[in-house]
Amino acid sequence: MERVDAGVREQLLKDDQQIVGKAFDIAGNNARVIQANTRHMALLLMNPAIPDRASRMAAFAEELIDANITQHIKEPVACARGCSHCCTTYVSTTLPEVFCLAQAVRGKKEKHARVIVAAARSKSMPQLEREVNRVICPILDNHACTEYLHRPVVCRAVLSTSLPSCERIFLGGISEPFAAPPSLGGLRSYVVIMMRAALQVAGLAYRNYELTHALEIALASEDSEQRWLAGEPIFDAVAIDRLDQGETPLTKIVDGLANAIRPTI
Ligand code: SF4
Image (cartoon, rainbow, N blue to C red; front, top):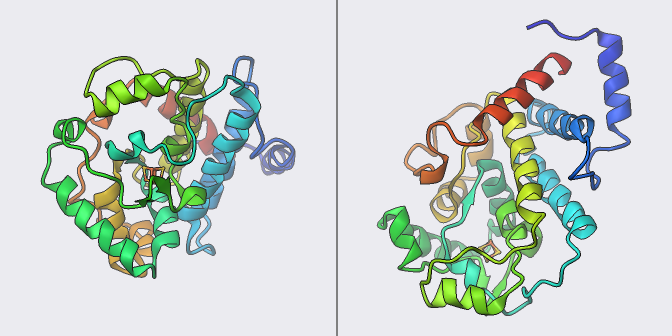
């Protein structure tokens, strides 16, 4: 791989500063901004001077999806504080997002104990069974997310336009398409693709894992994030999301983006 000229890289980074972390055009030609955000996350992940760089990268991605949801989702949504149907389902997330949440939970004994109990339940259940036997997210309390600012990307990007539909799906166990604003799926895919490509460029695991078991492991030691960044296989016992094994519809796009970014790092 040939790196682009140092002067060109310097100019790229300067130009990136104007667009990273902001809402972007989700319908038009946005290759430049996608690359800028991905490069930003990859450089963050590759900076050894920042011990919690994985958490920080996740926090960046979480703010990026929030900025874009605010900008692009104009339909009225049914989601409101006190409604928590979707917090009883399987939560699929990257490991940096797990560390970001773990940072917020660390030291909160009751919540940590709930994570251990929920992880034991989810570990003993095949993923498909989770769609029938609900495991309530241990971060949920009184029907509200207690770490709202640190919740994973997927939690931010589940917005429903129909409460009756959510009730049929989550309470009635009826299989029907989730009623979401039309542009939400594409928006979430953009952010997921950028995160994955950045993780790939940094040589880190980029697939999705089950939240509670991964969170239990992240909380088990103070330096779990640093150990993972150093290559210790501390999450080997956590199952990868069944929808994220082998080639997925995103694989080629993520590979292409990572290949475009590498020479500019
Ligand atoms: S992290 Fe928060 S939003 Fe996500 S499932 Fe748990 S309680 Fe719900």
